[in-house]
Amino acid sequence: MNTKNESSGAGSAVILAAVVVLLAAFIVEFGLQTLVWADAKHWASVNPWLRTVPQQLATVPSPANVVPAPSKTPPKNEQWKAYDYEFTVPWAAQSKLVPHPAFSEFRFDSGQVIVFFDPQSQMDTLRGMKSANSPEYQNLQNVPDGQELDSNYALYQAVYAASPAQASPFMHTSGALRLDVLLLLKLGFGFDAQGGLYFFDFGKNRGFQFGDPANGQPVVLRVFDDSNNQFRFIFTALAGSNAQITQADINALAQSLAPVPILER
Image (cartoon, rainbow, N blue to C red; front, side, top):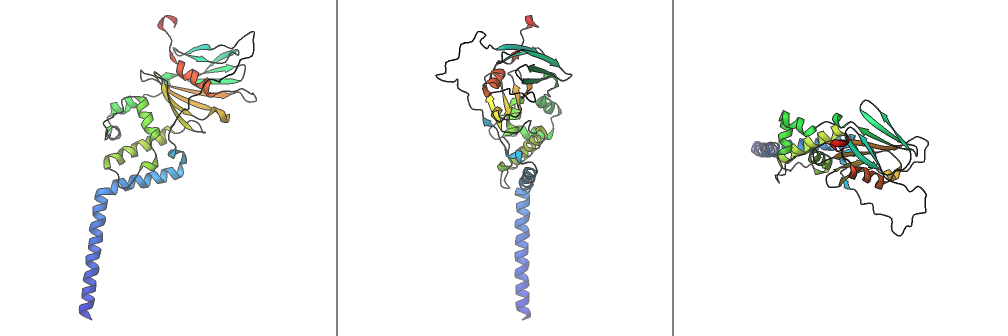
């Protein structure tokens, strides 16, 4: 009986030792990745929008076979200027510029409102991270395909494209560290408006759109030009108005945004 007990105890000890060794090996190999995976699941449970990634903005085609009604005053695009930049608005209604300390507000008699934030107030996030040369920045640059984040647009694109669903206890350590930084930045950036997240590329101007004008809620636009400048707009309507803002209207502004020629400043 004693021999059996000793044999059973020895077997249990061997099994326990094997489990400890395996657990230790797992922690060494996948411990950090598991922590990132657990954090990502927790953050997503508190902030469900963290799972949202940008969808390509659908092209808005011109209406086909539509003959416009005759008009003595056909609508025309108007050019607006603020902070040494200009852009096109598609509404022909009378409008006025209401200046504020950190933004300019364009109010149209037809009810539409465009808020244009001072570009100088938009943080150059990538430059700040480069200057600090923080571990977070180094982890962001550690990408398998060698595509470094070389612009603010590239940084925001990587941040908004990150999702907790990409986390796994078995991913590479470098990938886990990078995803952890991206998700933390995404939490910090937040969502500017509800109703969807989209990306667009109009050549010199690229960026992200928060919200869908079709649902009647405010739409926020973040635009990045080819000089690494960042711009932020809000499209909304005056309370009580029946003003309409279409995707084509928003696209027209995003495409036309450009510096005012020096001679016209």
